[in-house]
Image (cartoon, rainbow, N blue to C red):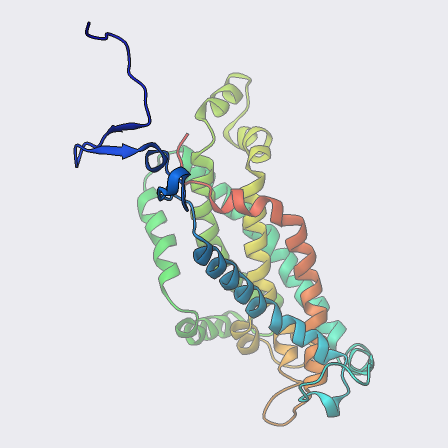
Length: 316
């Protein structure tokens, strides 16, 4: 009699060769299966050599990333005479830090930088968030040219803008003024952050805005009370980017600010190593101190950075 059931066994026809294929090969995997049959490695499964190469590459990348700041930290605790030696700290000293904090205008530079950074970050977050929300939710004349303008401004290198901005700041009397640097840094941070915030607000359902209007909120009230609390990842990235722009920028700070009492940290560092002096001990000590606030800010913002940077990848 002809069987009507499903036949099971250890081999099945191969659609290509029409011959029997061992069950160990059909199940996939790697290495050798029962009876000496060679297993086929599954998709996404790495072999031993591939795993070894991957881990070696990750280890090398980690060493390359960690070595410069680690060596900077080590050098800051060396005497000036040992700054260029390749050995670790043999004569541990805090003399470089003492010199930076007590014998230079470092604290003045630090205060100037904190003022510029705080104002830049607050204004940058507010302008970027409101601009991104307006472009995401409303349609108004000139919206498309506005977004193209914000995008095109990112195409120009900072170096070619120094001279025209310097002339503009001189005409407005904003050289050696913190407000001049703040305006300059906002022109760098706001266009990028506004585009990013627009993409983030696009992922928030419009139904939330509509529910706010039903409850009697005006557009700004809806933005402030309902949408902004949901935008914490985007706000964190915007704030961090604005902070880094103002804290670590060197070109504009060096061109627009002169006189030690007006310098920010970026300009002040250049007084340690230039064509007249070569104080690498003080330079490394000051650099370590400058890195501490950036590490603290990054520690607070890092849990939101991935979500904020990937905002706008999908639409709600």
